[in-house]
Length: 236
Ligand SMILES: Nc1ncnc2c1ncn2[C@@H]1O[C@H](COP(=O)(O)OP(=O)(O)O)[C@@H](O)[C@H]1O
Ligand SMILES: [Mg+2]
Image (cartoon, rainbow, N blue to C red; front, side):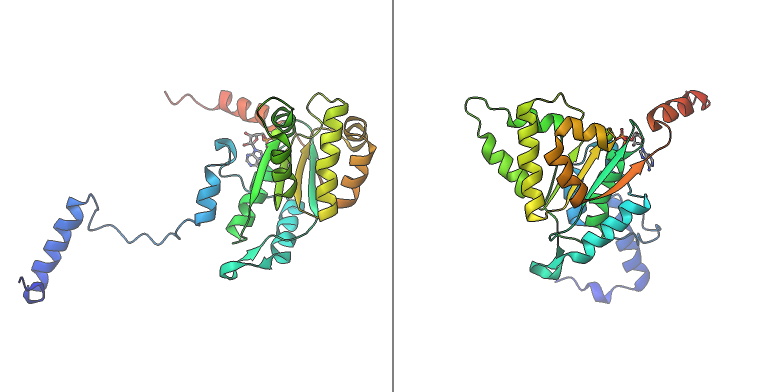
């Protein structure tokens, strides 16, 4: 049996340094005291589109909605708060004002706050495409998954071409979430009166009652970012 304790300190330190070096770790490096990433946030990362993976909700109305939802959370298994009934959030604004960024930022903020959260995100256009009746596909099951999900994010409501069928799907979805008081994040390009025309008065009326409203204004951030890139000195 080898007696490691009997080695002189200098020998031990040299041995430890050579083990670390063999593993590709710099023995002289300062210890890394950054907090471990949260498992729920890591898991969410793979489901958040790369463009919004580090989004932070920095609009005061969005952060206050996050606080309210986190505060209302019921303790679940393991003592972590789980999401409960609560108000929804409607983020309206013209193209490129940061609506989708704020919505994913809100989901990330809830996860960072340690809220145990089952969530789904879908654009309104994808919602209708996925649920459209077709052979061998159980649209009703998918509908119920979305309707019952503790937190649902519907991006770009009112942007897809509408019909009686899309109006009915939107009505069934929003009505379920309204009745069950399930928190829902909704973004839209439309003002309230255009939204009412697009999705119908029954949906608009429910949204008016169930949501806090945030209006984002300012320029189209995509165009601003593109102009900044043009102005920046070339790095190549
Ligand atoms: N608060 C923010 N900080 C930094 N970048 C942002 C912010 N809000 C939006 N962006 C960026 O601006 C662009 C447009 O934002 P996006 O949320 O897609 O706009 P919208 O959904 O309103 O059309 C994206 O590249 C996004 O990453
Ligand atoms: Mg968007």
